[in-house]
Amino acid sequence: MSAKLIKGTEIREEILEEITKEVAEIKDKHGVVPGLVTILIGENPASMSYVTLKIKTAHRVGFTEVQDSQPEDISEADLLALIDKYNNDDSINGILVQLPLPKQVDEKKILNAIDPDKDVDGFHPVNVGRLMIGGDEVKFPPCTPAGIQEMIVRAGVETSGAEVVVVGRSNIVGKPIANMMLQKGPGANSTVTIVHTRTKDLAGHCQRADILIVAAGVPGLVKPEWIKPGSCVIDVGVNRIGMNEKTGKAILRGDVDFDAAKEIAGSITPVPGGVGPMTITMLMKNTLKSLKFKLGLA
Ligand code: GUN
Image (tube, rainbow, N blue to C red):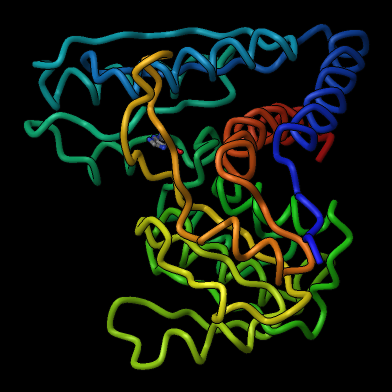
């Protein structure tokens, strides 16, 4: 048996179409479009390419987009002042500070300075708390977990009562996706287990999973015998394992042994082209949502 592929590249197109349509409708009725600012510090090549893609996508769906590039040696005070400027700019609905930040800047201080109502990354403690409470309280779910949940739902996988096992306990993926899947509501209502580097029987837990979400950052960690036949496997790993000499592009591997796993799982996300494209897509969704909250439409 070969698993159904859950393609982030296809789901992205569906969602971006939906967003583009909604942006045009809001522009018609209210005369405004969502505004997104991305703040990029220094010249980290991976960060530069992420930010370029974010800006390109924002432009495609009809947002106003501002790219604010700052030097690697910016002081913490100057960066805080910049955030304050955008917090008070009415045309900006979403503020994204691209991580990682240089050493002289305290990441926690910076993320905490962003107005929670413009925190489209969902990293501010207020939004983390809102996510924990769940239901109507949630404003901006963090983008990668929101993308994972959207993929599971759009693939038609039953989540209610399902055993969900999350491999990895990061603040950006593991903890929030576990929290989202256990909430009351559609696309959730699951029984959730989080496993991590200190877990005694990783394989045993994974073997129980109807939905296995792997965000460990270890290429090929999940072996085919860990996978329950017919289950849904979401691979969040994006591991650079080498360079393609001809194209000059990085060779990417997930956290799951994909070729073997696809013969056992019922559905599975590929790497690349699985969860990856969903993060920026959900950033667009959160930025649109931010404007809708402001206009009283959400
Ligand atoms: N760096 C890598 N991923 C992300 C992300 O999702 N948001 C931000 N702000 N920085 C990142």
